[in-house]
Length: 418
Ligand code: AMP
Ligand code: GLY
Image (cartoon, rainbow, N blue to C red; front, top):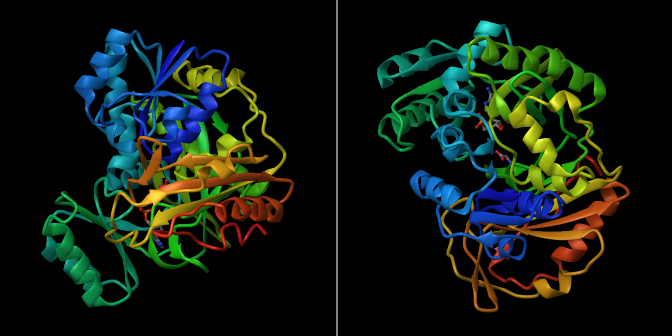
C-alpha cells in the first residue's frame, strides 16, 4: 500500500514510525513532514491545510490510505473530500469533528445524552456574557468557541479577569465570535483515548500528558511538555465508567444523527470523587500522548487504523508492550510565548541506536546535514522502561546527550507515575 500521513509534528513522526514498520506499507509519504519524519517517509511539501493540493497528490500518486494527524484539516473536511474521491482516510468527517471544532456543539451533545460535564452557557455578545459572570460564583471558565490550538481558555478567578477574557474573544483574538462560560471543575485531570468505527469502540492504552510549561505543573498551559503510558489514574474501574457514562453515549448519539464518528476520540476528563466529567473532546491523537502510545503498541497499526474506517474494530485485538513509555518534550526558549526559529540542534547522532529510545521530531527543519529548530515544541525524546522510573531515567539520559543551548525541558515528566 501507499500511505500518506498528513501533519508535521511529533505525533505525525510517531505515526510515520509505526506505519513504516508495517509489512502492509510499501511506500510512505508525509505532508509536509519535518527533518525527523524524512527518515521514515518521503516528505511532500504540501501544508496540512492545503486540501486541493493534498487531494491532487493522492489522486496522482494513487495513495491507498491517508492518516490525518491534526484537527484543522479534519474540521475542514479533508476526510470527507478524500472519501468523495474514493480514497480511504483515517479520521472523522467534518460533521463529527465538530466535537473538537465547536465547544457549543459538544456541550449541547452532552445535554442531549446526559453526559456528565461542567454546567455551561454559550454567548454571541459580550454584554450578556459579562452579565452572566456577575450573576455566577467564581472561578468561571471562559472559552473561545473554535479551534484555538490549546489557547483560548481562561480560568477567571476575578470579575476583571472574566471581563478581560470575554472582551478578548469578542475583539477577535481567536478568530471566532462566540464563547462558552463554564462552571469550574475540581479534581484531577486525565485523558482517555479510544478508536471508534462509527459504532464499535476500542479503548487504547491509557496515557497522560503534562500541560503546564514548568516543573511541578506550574506556569502557563502548553500543547503538552511530556507524556507517559500507562497512566495510573485511569484504573479499570474508571475506564469502565468513562466508557459507559461518556464515550458510549457520545458515539451512539452521533450514529443516531447520521454523522457517525470514525477515528480516534480523545476525551479530556476531570476525575472527582463523584466520578468522571468531560472537559473537552479532541478528534485526533494527543500530541505528545501519541508518541508514548506508538512506543508501547505491539500490533501492526495499519490494519487497526483501517478497521476504524471500515467498521471492523470489533475484530481487532490490540497488543501492548507491558512496559512504561515516557516522552520528554524539548522546546525552544520562550515557548509557549514568543520564540526564535532556526537554532541548531547537535548531538542527535549520539541517541541513534540507544536501546529503547526513540527521538520523534516535533518542529525541526533539515538544512543539509544540520537539524534546525522550527517551532515551539521541537523534539520528543521517548523511552521505554520496565517501570515508570526506569523509563523516566532512560529518557533523561537521552535528553542529556542533546546539545541545544536554545532549548529547555521539564525535569519531572511522569512524576505522578513514578
Ligand atoms: P480545554 O481546551 O477545554 O481542554 O481547556 C484547557 C484546560 O483548561 C484544561 O486542560 C483544564 O486544565 C482547564 N479547564 C478547562 N475547562 C475547565 C473547567 N470547566 N474546570 C476546570 N478546568 C478547566
Ligand atoms: N497533549 C494535548 C493535546 O494533544 O491536545
